[in-house]
Length: 346
Image 1 (cartoon, rainbow, N blue to C red):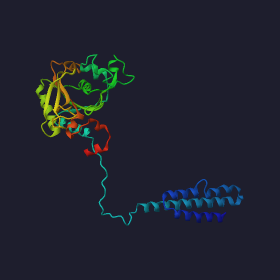
Image 2: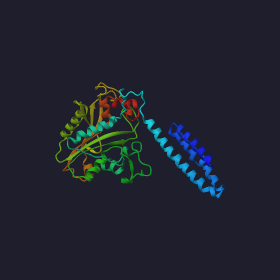
Image 3: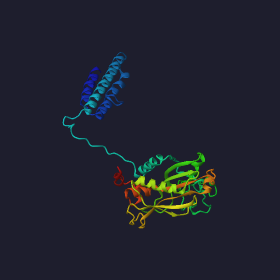
Image 4: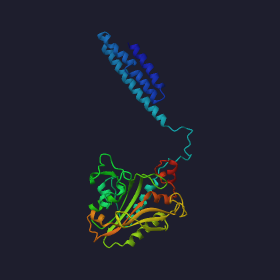
């Protein structure tokens, strides 16, 4: 039995020295110390030996096991150290390769730029969940009960929470940001100066300038004796800040249930320099926001007296603003996950 243990030791040491990788060393360890290994066979035979030999053989086997464990650990450290050594033909003077760096999505960057601009003139930043209720999306905003925007052809109602007439219990993906502005006013004291960026959802047909999920950026001022002309100056100041130059702006009378009077606010198309393209539908102007004075019923829903407070509201189409900044002619590119497109904005 002693001769067999000596033979196992010699063979084991040779195999351990011959292992050139951690994986091959692990194989040797299994071969020597595993359940089907050479030592395991010795230990299985101990009960059949003469009683006077069992203790001696058992101690010798355990000593051999400890010996193998020590030299395997030592060999493992040798292999690891050798693997970490720098090859002699490695030239440390050769310039390295910079890792590929990421960048903010252009819509995210535009949102941050607008946040900085509004913070600089005393506005707060407000955010809320993408899910809202019919109460805040429509009822509080003066939408009549039969308004087509409430239909499933325009709004994504949530299954299980889409029972008509449930009011606050009827839930949907927010079709616009304005309802949450009422929620903000209910929770805070006037005067208000805040902006509200976020994604909205409409069941629209997609084309170069429309998508089913897109970003808006709402700004609202409510105060006593706020003049309408101050709101127009705010719009022009924001656009000039974003684009670094004066941008042509026009305001057309428009109807929106939540403002009175209401306006369609357009800017000159910067993709084609007002000459006409697919983005502006060849008219040279592109609608970027509705705006106007909050409707008295909206102020009442917020708990304010419309005889005491007035203000100005705009809801910027953030995607379209980014299209103007970079000359992008198709809004669907923003959500295409095409790295060739996104890498342009590093």
